[in-house]
Length: 376
Ligand code: UDP
Image 1 (spheres, rainbow, N blue to C red):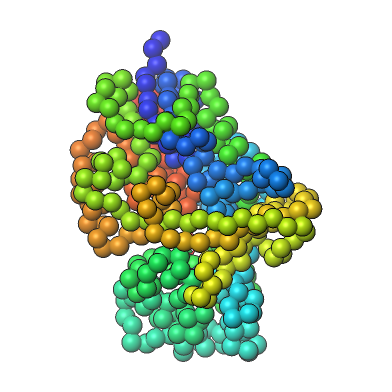
Image 2 (cartoon, rainbow, N blue to C red):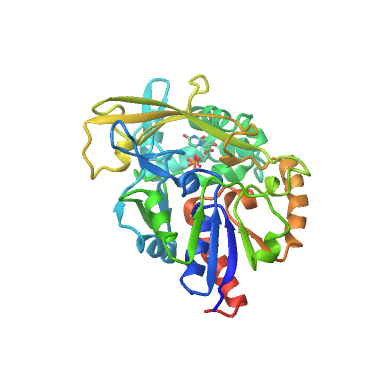
């Protein structure tokens, strides 16, 4: 029996999950294209040649989710080791605990408040005149007040996004919890961990099926013939690139890293944020702390710098400014008229998505596609 041909553009989590879900029905022949020379997109991990430490090449990725189905799904490919992300912040020569929790508050204000006292105190710090926060700055001023905002959010956010926080949506700050206890877990999710042999290995296993061929170093541009050859296309690349930027470019921040190697332990933690505006990098990640079950004498760490994305840079964080959203709407109208192409993932939908969101959405899209194709 001839299998139905499917084209998938992008070998990151979105593309790999759809490929894996379709491949196992044995009804499809799947071609996955990626312009890079490796699979796994920005989740790519590899062993550092000099130190043998597992490095997250495009920046730290800590897997966390409250969705049991997603957790069990990723665990079906690889063993996850328990890992809790406990981020520290350096501000004016002092080390604090993130996300802002009772320890941070007490240390910062030189007090020893109880949870209830701290809650009342922080409420009293909040800017009362702000109703529904319209941007990042208002959100922060309303909920933590000027002092904590200036110390932990203003400088970091300005460096990270390259603009005044009042130009950014409040939703970015809503990613971070504020706690009135000593819980310093950066995430609120039920499940958290790091894959023992890295993320590349999960994606390699997803794509390992005989019905899947992976073609690397191959930049995709839609050829009208593709719509005859393939019964459906799943596109996970940048949405504006797909349409050749005809309505303009969507803006992203990109990051780059300066790599250092030394003996021993450089900072004693996986991630330390530098929240002052005048320190040029946003954070330092030291990757051996992401695999505490391994032993390494040397260490490799990276200063992370953020900048505007230029044409040849890798897009990381969608900025989603008002002008971007207007452009996005135009592209989305065109997407809706393309029956044979599904756009999914961070770049194709221009959203700030974590790995677990991407996987959840890709599983749902694959499920719907199979239902529509009468395959269960
Ligand atoms: N943020 C901040 N100070 C910090 C950490 C984060 O102001 O020490 C802000 C910053 O604007 C960032 C946002 O909170 O973009 C979300 O942070 P998160 O750690 O979720 O960012 P990501 O993991 O996506 O880099």
